[in-house]
Image (cartoon, rainbow, N blue to C red; front, side, top):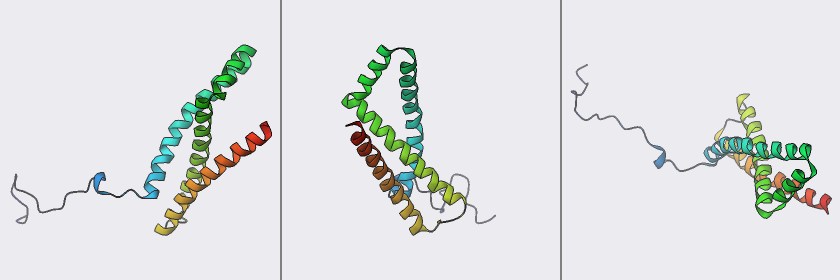
Length: 136
């Protein structure tokens, strides 16, 4: 008890570091992206519900939604939704693997994070290329 500094005196203990001093790691970024894509999927699913409701209500409403989603902005939103879907799916698989206690070594977690990013981009482009080939 004699080693305890007096009340109001400066402590010799180190302060806990804040996020500003950490260098972002790919595992940290992909963990944050997993949460962000989960929220984005909520809004993307609302667009899907509106599209389905338009299809069920009338041909005019469906044509309006088709036109809206066919614009450049609509295509970008759908592309982002596709990427968010694959990124969130692969991130969930990555977390499921970790929940089993496997692949928790630093090098492996980094490799899995990169595979999640590359895999989600690759699957997104693959789906869109196949979609355009089938559409033509």
